Every structure is written in C-alpha cells, then in structure tokens.
Image: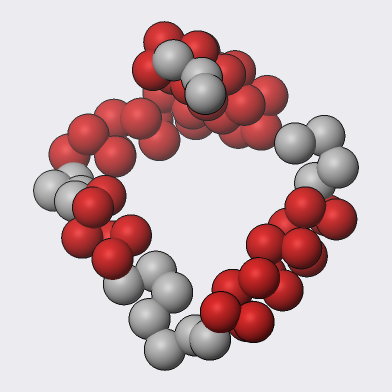
Length: 68
C-alpha cells in the first residue's frame, strides 16, 4: 500500500504530465474549492451494479492500463 505522500506526489506528477503545470494547478484549486465527500461518493459508486458488472469493469480497466 502506498503512503499518502507517495499518492500525492504521483498524482501531482500525473496531473502535470496530462494537463501541464498551469492547468494542473488550476485543477487542484478547483478541487479544493468544492465540498467533495469522497466517502459519500464511493458509497454510491457501484450502486445498482451486480458483482459481475463490477468485476468486468475492473478487468477492463486493468487491461486498458497495463502499467498499474
């Protein structure tokens, strides 16, 4: 399991690689302004999906992102 510091560092690097420095910073500022409750979001993430559908999504994600 990765530490919070590693996740922050890798996340920041991914944002900068994808968006560039300025837009990555804008994205972070936008996220900080929003009242986002990760726990509540996660509770509803798979609502209405069967375990088979969830499993297939995981397989599809893994196949599309072989670096993970």
